[in-house]
Length: 271
Image (cartoon, rainbow, N blue to C red):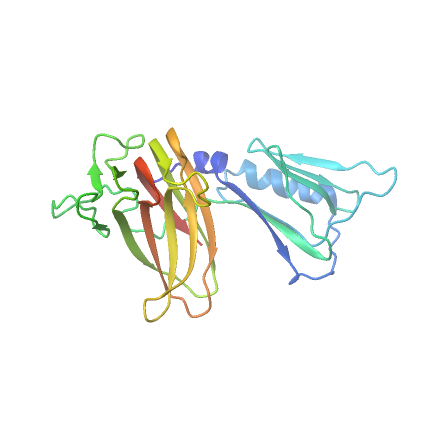
């Protein structure tokens, strides 16, 4: 089942700093023009807001910054020349670049989903494995769960780990473009998930994106991590840039290095 655009706009704001390539070149748009652009895009109900600036600067003495804020938690403070003096996402300050560069802000989740059967709703052959996906594992094999699911979705996939840490896996492969940025999101639900080691550096409950070489070797891995303990449905995100020459990625849901039960539903991958 797809995720409504309004929900995506509310839950799916990501930010990252782009260094170096823009260099020290400055653009100085009028603040009013920036405000108009932001209002127009938000007012039109766009699911993807992109705001880009080419430099940061400290406000001049006596200058009054112009503030832009959205109900998603994004707040920009702009100098009178249009440069950015500070950026906050909710209660978190986004670090500024020390030299020439820029910042890109983007709401994700409103574009076309590149995955087939992302909500596990289709099982045309009735084998209890969602079409286009693979289950792996024996005693801890994933389960297509039509009782526990997100919203009006038809099904989710349940992953469990009992006496031995780790579960079976649910996975699919996706064709991608080399040297291209993508975002991944997944709705996840946790029950009694506990890592097997208190010092674990990676969450037990995760959705992995593995970039594959032409021979099938994994050349890079990124994660969207679910909550430990017990938590209702929560949407988690990850971003990845494919390496040169990579045309396939493998997306895998699993519990690793811990115990408990997790459900995943409504995955989404977009450029």
